Length: 120
Image 1: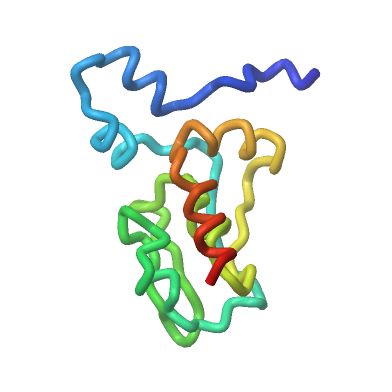
Image 2: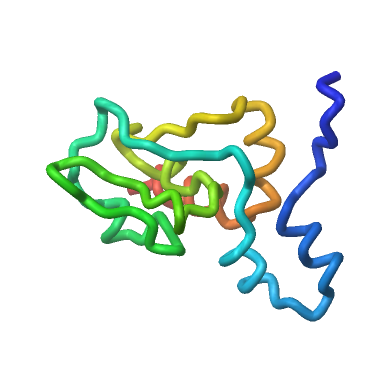
């Protein structure tokens, strides 16, 4: 065992601490510590990440033909990494095991969106 609580979610922690905070607000401002996103060599600069709003906090820009992620805005949900059809974005700073157990709490819509995206 890793010794880390598999059910840990920063958003859930905020919601428990402040039960009157709407989930949308918690998702907008909660940042998963240690998660960073960057474009890799597969990034084509196609702009789908912006056009289809992979990032709900608008942390992605296309600069010089590559996606650039603004760390000050990025919340670490990894929606963009999961949804890029070219695998052009990657996460660094945490292991995939920890991410997989956290992302299901961050945005439960990811799995449905990925299913819909695969049907395109």
